[in-house]
Length: 323
Length: 283
Image 1 (tube, each protein chain N blue to C red):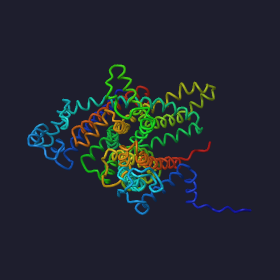
Image 2 (image 1 turned 180 degrees about the horizontal axis):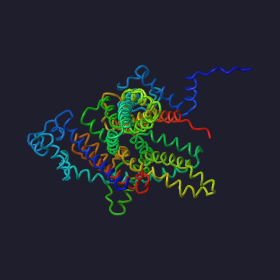
Image 3 (image 1 turned 135 degrees about the vertical axis):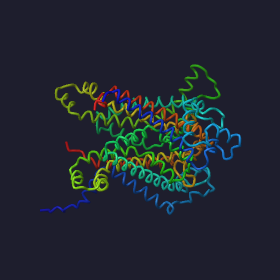
Image 4 (image 1 turned 60 degrees about the vertical axis):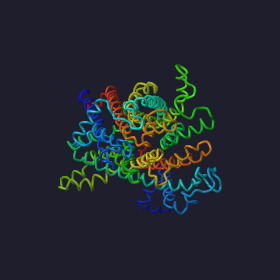
């Protein structure tokens, strides 16, 4: 099938994934114990004006299909509802928290990919060597660590005991730096969270790279090149690496998805002003509008990024749509 | 002349299991965990909910892992926490396995439209931020152990479904299945008697890591106070210790170490099972 058709298929899945999230959001509020009004108001006894306002806005007294229609209409306008706690539109609350979270997510993902791929490559080349064994074991141990615990341990070591790095926040609240000094301050505060998330993501890239290099090395054409006398370095550079990197591209997207939970937890520990903290505060304050807004935004972000990566992968490896 | 004893089939299998280091270590650790968890009420040195007088005391001969800021013995709490984690791990992974097997087998066996539809569902599900979905559901409904396990099970089945589907597709073309179809065995019988029992092995291996994942997810939920408040959970212990990091490092450290060791156990078992089921050809 042509590349266009393959991409169209992936786009359709992306679109449906978002619809599913929207639908789940819609259904959950109405199915959960307690009535939708209290959930959306965030308190047990909302005053009559609030009840009326909510009922009117979401059409809660109308048939279900109409409600869904109103809900979709609001969404397309970019209206995710209001947070009762801060009286601000959910969209803007999430918007200002998204930046810091992306800063950590993307930085860590890239660092982890680079380091993990390099280590995986080396481990596969020297299979069963000490290097290989040590890093395989390390990767298992890192995988078994809960994100919030690793964050706490790193904080304990570097901030509390050694005092080298700050324990919390994105900037020094007392200093009010601007410009370049502020950037440095942010970078300084970023070290521990990024270190933590990177460590947690390296094992995935390490394993994928290692296993795909091993698989590529076992291919017949590699043996042919070896027999023909091609230097090992050239074999690696020209053929093995390119083929082995392909699954890594897929993994990059999946890692972003799976690591969101970890990033949120690490943010909570380091009091980083991102989505994680917002999540925690909303849960504690029973602010459902914010929670559902976060879920929706993340679903859309993931669907978009995954589809983008699928497109890149299709461009890199025509075999996937030439079936 | 020495006559070699005939080795029984079970002995050979056990011998192979024992030969794989990760499996050996994994099973031993699992056994230890199970014993500790099951016997916890009998072997704990103190009642885990009792507030002793020695608040925040470091590990000593009296309190092997120290006490927390309320005076509760850490060792006892951690032992009780093992029960929570293991229950949730097994329940969630079990449910995830059952759903995955059902969907995967149906998708692979019936093919055609059913396959397309189910694969679509699997792909769509893979794109949703699962942890946050679990969060919302738990926040809206209750946070009891069974609820947490069920929600985790309902949202982590996709890998199992893919594995089962691949196995089903490959098994469908095997002779013994073709024979069964030709002799007119009913579809459900074939699925239940031939396909599933033979195709289940990758799912079993995946279930081991699923158990680890479920335990880690539950720990994350308890850390942000969305876990069952009525039971002791390791995530909760780490959360308790968070405010005491400077003066009571042992609380969070040991709570988290328990999680790491348990997750490692199941990873080792999964890895070992993998090696067990795919013996390498001698070069």
